[in-house]
Length: 529
Ligand code: DGJ
Image 1 (cartoon, rainbow, N blue to C red):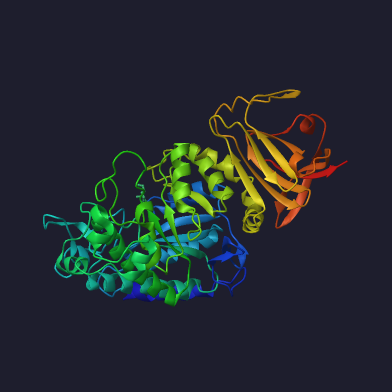
Image 2 (image 1 turned 90 degrees about the horizontal axis):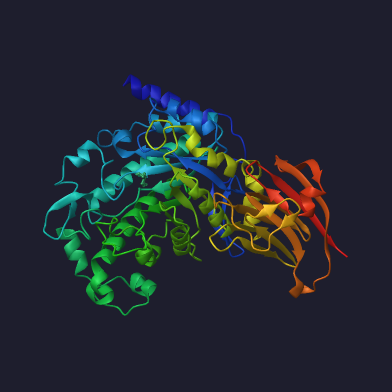
């Protein structure tokens, strides 16, 4: 009783914390002039984020979280909310962990993406409360082909759905109460890596009954097939398609109920069906998650979900590109909520940004001695994000306006051209010697060169990068002429204003402008004669 009163008081105090920024507008993802924009406090937002480990959102562990996070140039933290913790007994809620996350995020001046570990977590049901886990009769599991229950709650049960909705709605009501004005929480991940591990689809009685019905019209339309049964429409893939449909419907209802309370942008993260070899749904990846082969089904069904985010755990550049391609669709804003934590993932961030995405965020970033043994392992994040954090708002705005491009070093592609109207930025990776620029650059030592360029005026550019060198030229195909540098300033953005530090000239500009591993941002003004 006392604990409950304390919790109520703490929620009340949280709701009284003074509001910073625009209180009116909820965070929102929308398509504007053909480009997806994620707005926070009404302004385009770039996610420079990390995700903490699964069991880190506890008062006992947060002291091992914040010191590392505070040392990183980030603006967003992804943190879990556990169903088993917030609803220890049916209908009895304890939001102390949520209050802790929101209060501490404000103290540490970051925004939150809350991860709802509800019915699904990694394609299983391990975060369901004990009272759900221990009553399989009331809260039924997925039954495999042999009629054996597996460790996954079925999406074909109204009881399961009602229980999840009740908990999620209670969470959203609480969030509205403590964060309805300030919007520290900017995103909701509804469930975690949904799907089923251990069965391609549910064979329980409700599922079997639904499987005999015709495929719903919206699904048939979305996949461009003739109407019919699941087998007729999807053939050998019918079980996976049905599972995707069932889970998409369930999660859509959870998300919709939550959004009715507080309309926060909502997404689903996806355990990937890595595009190599034979991949068996339910075994190599959870069956029915929003993998690229069934994404059209999810899109047709789950209208309360803004986007599907591919968890990307491949450091192979080709594979990263393939995954990004699969989710960069006209109907899916690109955002990668989870990546590995090694330097290879820095390039992924630049790839996503170059496609107009909202960012990419590494998983398992804290010092609870799980993913990382030392903060040094994420030094690459400091290199990558340090120049970006002070101008994250500008980058997001330029991206929203279609003014931003990126270049990523790739084997055999050590010289690349970014085209901006009559101007071209020629990017070289490696092979720079004093006084000369190689026609065929050799590539950088770490193969991790990368660059971001934005056209901020007809002849003006803001450029930042790592281990890259650039030269500016006029596009011969567009009239040619002679290009000349009018001014190059090194500087940074401070609260929306460009603050120059010095002018670059001579060796620093005559043989190409070089970006090494130190945070460096240049503003370049070009002219022609
Ligand atoms: C994907 C999940 O979404 C995360 O919560 C975590 O379990 C990672 N896999 C890696 O372990």
